[in-house]
Amino acid sequence: MSESNRATLTFVLWLFSAAVLGALFLSAAAQGELTPWHVVLAFVILGLAVLGTPYILGQPRSESEQEKTKRRRIDNLLRDMSDEDLVELKQRLSGDDERAQSVDDFLGDDGELARRG
Image 1 (cartoon, rainbow, N blue to C red):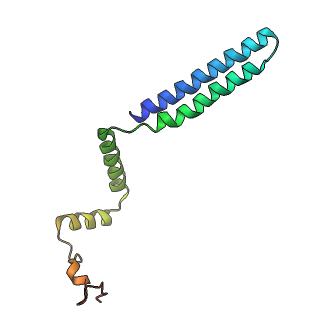
Image 2: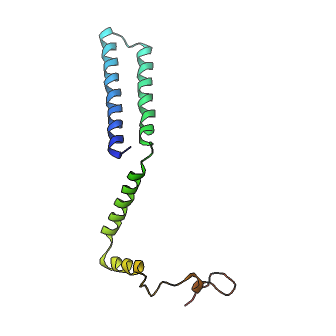
Image 3: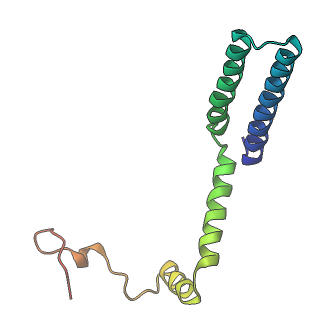
């Protein structure tokens, strides 16, 4: 389910709940008294809206949406990088980075990590 669908469903849920609560209290006003059943029904309606909201928002995303979100995040990260950072990233991705060393260069004779200076 897409984010816009979730937002729309959440909005409709709360709008419908507000309309039903409004009708409930208008009917109570028309009768001239607010009975305990009006209050109980109002709490049930509010409870359904409160419980329905996390259910709607917690629906799993489709794989295509997850991929789109990843792409958007990567695009935002790349857009925020400086020119120097972009050049460094390009060098690292192309394998031309002189600073890139193998794991063996960081291991001592006993297999422990060793700091080389």
